[in-house]
Structures are given as structure tokens and as C-alpha cells.
Image (tube, rainbow, N blue to C red; front, side):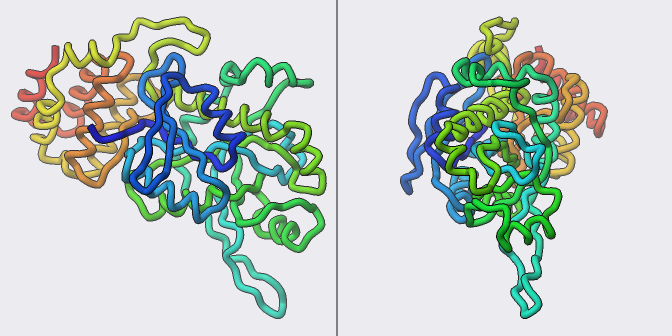
Length: 370
């Protein structure tokens, strides 16, 4: 069976990698033929799988690895999780920033009159950003923060900001440099600076089947106090907060089995769902019988309607593919592992019935329903 993961998390530093690993259960290792290693596991209370890699710093590396895992594991979401330097006073140490835009820092033109930036705003997934807004709108996401980190809170704990970030090939350790002035002038809405997200965003620009989002903990103020902050353990705390925010986002993307506190819900296992459902291939054939199923916009509308029927704050999540049959197969897989699979199947039928009535195809699909 080909390797896969529902959510892939990329990190740059060992401290960031360990923060995500701390949350994963049932861990195993995946190794790409070219050597990239990921640890795959599950989050307590959630179905589906999460795979995390430590890839080192820099946008070039992040772009190469993001494209590699996109083709290899076909995740429904790719998250970059780690630390960043805060650029504004409201970015307190250990706060979390969720990217609404990703600026590539360095593109521009150097002239006798000075440097003229040519801002490149990288793509982030609107769907993931909206799901993060739901997941992080209350303090419940903090339940994923380890107790030893929570014990260090001296005020009201970390805040979450939804603002742009900048990614460049530089560590910024001073507030009084030409580069800092350039950032303030050209990227005044950015809250934090880091070194990897622009590469991942470029992969999305060139792809049609990957959703990405960056979640960063503020570990320093991108000034001369960075060394002191790092020595105090700020990277460890900021990494733990970013990993906790990513886990809370995963709760919006993956089917539930039990909450992080151990309270279970009435959810059937994926195996039990498979036993109660027709074989996957039959579902795929029945769905491909709809004449419009080969169109990407039709499938996207279908997922949006399923989410609405199920009462979700976002579309029903299924990893995209440019190949219609592969996308349909992923929709079926996600439907069969959803926390209430019969409801997902009913929602799929209702969405198709509303979208484009096709009596023949609907009749074939109805035979697969309980």
C-alpha cells in the first residue's frame, strides 16, 4: 500500500520537531526514496494521520520538501509549524501567529536611489485559515499545550494573531538596520519574520492540489535581545504553543474519536465503517457516473454543500487531485472515515441531488446507501 498522511507538518528546527512529536501517538517512520524522513502518528482523540518532518532552515529546502511530500503522501493539508521573530509590540513572546499572507522578503531591485522592493505575496489556503479561525477562537486550543509549558505562564497565556508573515534567507537581530527599515516601509502589515514559508507558498502557487498554512510561535523580537530570549527557553515555549495550535486545527480537519481530555464520543472506527459500507471501488464508480464529476469546480461545490448539510463551519475536507477519479476516491475515503459516516453519505447524496439531478446516476448511488 502506498504511504499517505492526512496532514503533513514541516518544521525547521529540532525544538519545533520535538514539540509536534510530543503530541503524536502510535508513531512510525516513513522514509522517502530520496532520504527525507517523517514520523507518522495520530493525535489523541482524532482519526486520520499526521506526519512531521524536520527539514532545516530556508525557503529553498522547504519548497523542495513540500513538493516531495505533496506527490508522495498526498496530504489534504500541509502546515509549517515553528518559531518566528515578532516585528510589532503586540507580538508578545510565546504568542501564536497564523499567516493570512506570506511575503517573500528579498525580491526587488537595487538602484542608486536605494532598494525598491517587488513584493511577492504567497498563497495561503482560505479554507485552512478559516478552519484555524474556528479552532483558535476560544481558549480550548490551549489544552494541547504541555503542562510544564503552561506552568511558565505569568500573565493570561498566549494570544493568537491572524496576520501576514515575512519569510527570507536572513536572521534579523536588530531593530536599526536598513533591512528593518525596508521591512517597515514595504511590509508594514507583517507581524513576524521567519525563513521557510515563502518556499512552501511557491509550491502552492504552482500546484492545484495542496493547501498550506503557517503557524508560528513568537520566540524573540527580531532584535539584539534574541540571544537572551533563546537562552531563556523561548523557542521551546513558542514551539509548544505553535504545535498546540496546529493540533487544534487538526481537530477541524480530521474525524474525531475522543477529545484530548479522554472523553469519548459515539464514533465508529474506520474498520467498522468499512464493514457497513459498500466497497470503495463501487462508490467511486457510482460517483463517476455523474456527468459533471470530471469538473473540478463541480467537485468543490459538492464538498461545500456537504459541509453545509453536515453543519460544518467549512467545506467537507478531502485532498484535491487534478485527476478526477483520484479526487473522487479521496472524497469516498474521507466520507467513510468521517466521525458520522452514515450522515456523510447522506450529505453526499443530498448534495448531488440538489446540484444537478441525474435520475440514473442518483438511482445507482442510492443502492449503496444503508
